[in-house]
Length: 158
Image 1: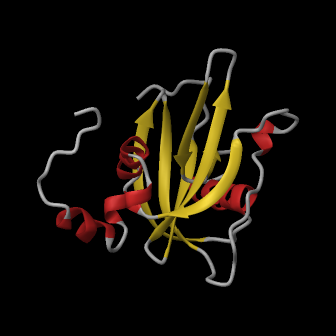
Image 2: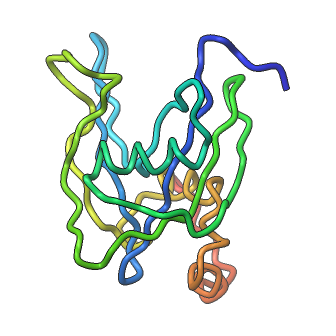
């Protein structure tokens, strides 16, 4: 894969607490429309930083949580860059807060709106698809959840 110099490689943190996934509500607005979606904490890997260090740093900046890597989940090749995902543990006594994204410093309308804990049934199918690509099936209990869903087709717009 040839890397695109316009895009930094990225890392994301998958954090689970009580069967819920730590998610960020993001809203990117331009002159034509606004794109709102939920994603997991993460961002660009800085020069000299490992993917693991980036995931932990981004989690602290965006959610105020101190994390430790449990295990790597996936490497995705997208838009001429690599995206790394990690299962990350955080102390039970820490509460997630809506932090900031330094890459958006000075913006009148920063995209990070809030951080929330969501169960799978509270996440849109589109946003859930990205979680699967980040390796959510490798996180304990989510495989069993998927198997229990059965074989019914639930394609959006059907």
